[in-house]
Length: 300
Image 1 (spheres, rainbow, N blue to C red):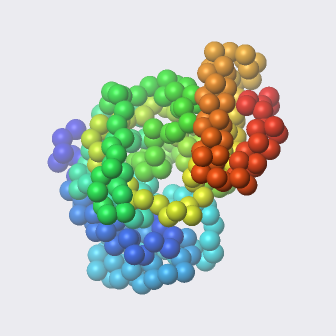
Image 2: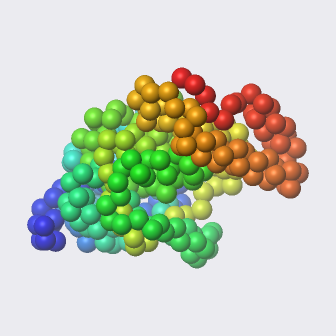
């Protein structure tokens, strides 16, 4: 399919936002400046208390492609993802976040990859991480080919503490509906659970260019080292998907289980040492309690 053919494909871009009005404009501007212009931009405001609504209404008046929605109450990150998906009109849905900056060819290159690989449920890519001054401090790349086998990536993700797929992707909406909505029992990492569920059913497409620049999150953001609630959520996601992978078979002693346990034990130790080195006594004691109470891999 040529780029002129791709131009006829309508894309829903779902911009998830909450209380980041100060950095929201740059995200909106970069999304409305995409080389692929056949789109709707859904600004999904999770009941912000700043001037996000004013910005959303302003862009809605300026550009007919913009649709602004303000949730009547804060439904959490997971709930906001589900509402955004429900509001999306297209089969091709880009899930993007407030404050980040998007290369003008991002949508086009995601679409190319998905069109070339019909077995892929989602497309993701390399990305840059910015510091508070907008300087690139790290680039996240992976040695994947453009088509990544789903089961292989699934097993890789269960054995590493970080997800190579960030929460910014293009997905086929029908594939998410087949797998079920984002799981609201997971407050902050439901996207990781969703990618794992999709990878059990489908492949992924990877774009090796760093087309997204991720802005630093607030220091008090809950997804950070030392917050043992995040560790519990992440391990719960790994545990649940490990058992999904087994499909009723008993293989807790399998090679995959052993690799998972080693990774989880190492990550717990890293967190404990981090707390000690920074004098976070309370967090360290919470970690001790956590490690005593939570097995590395639970039976279901």
